[in-house]
Length: 180
Length: 249
Image (cartoon, rainbow over all chains, first blue to last red; front, side, top):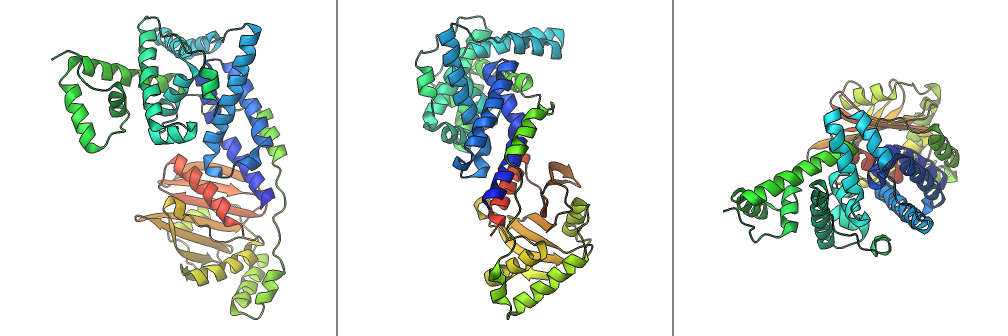
């Protein structure tokens, strides 16, 4: 059973990669960084696969791994004095969408990047991964009321950024708080 | 009335996301409809939500780096399934074992075919005639697990899918074109079938739509499994995982 489970875990992992990569790109706004994170997440998942008790939860488990890796990367980047670069994904989107919409896509990606990580995460789980509030709360290990307030604030700040208003400053504690 | 009303921002978003019950939804909807400011905000949030999907939702069919696939396949390389143990010998005197031995012998005579999906869907559609129909009674199903173990040369049993609301309603046993088992599950009138037989030897994993059904094939070098039903992609993925977890003894 152990050997077979590992094999099926591998197949489930491969099946989840397109969605994980999509989520990583949306979360980071950077295609190269997203691929690096997915690759690192694969390695960590293979090392820790025995810790996944329920194969049905593989998608949320992988997102959690990727998220923690992203936080580590942000810490390293800040220590190096580098800021997150979103231009690459924005340029990709500009190339893949009509010119008129291209500017909108770039604006949107930049507006998303201006949000705190916790707001981006909830926006993506609800909007992109189509999770309901209960599923998001379970995945993040937070109360459903917190999901609702993060979602409301995140969307409001996204809208403000899109309308050219200066978004509220992300709280510096966000990385510590995001650790699941 | 276009002023900002007394409505929680969280409730507006729960309304947009379809998270409210019917009564609360109707209440919020009437407030939103009566207020131009809220109507405009709701429209903008809905547009942002749609734009998020439009911008980030693509790329699912983009080829993955082969190095990722190779790394995972290498790390999770299949191991041989455990062959049946001496436990079967203890049942030698029983009628179950006699039947199992007969089926197993027939399996060796008839090697597995490669068009497992076509056979699975034909079985589901009733185009194949089962040699026997096993009722979903616990003792009979337990005995059938020994039969399947013999026939498939792998320690298997009917998985319990009750966590997802599916209950086993019967097992159809086929000998044509090869020995196979169709485990039939039901949930609120929906039928989910799990077709099992010996593998043709070619590992396969795929999920697709065919003949109006969601179909998932999962085959290694020992057992081939085809699942079919009318569920979503995500639900099929969860069912496939649950079926696998519960398949092995």
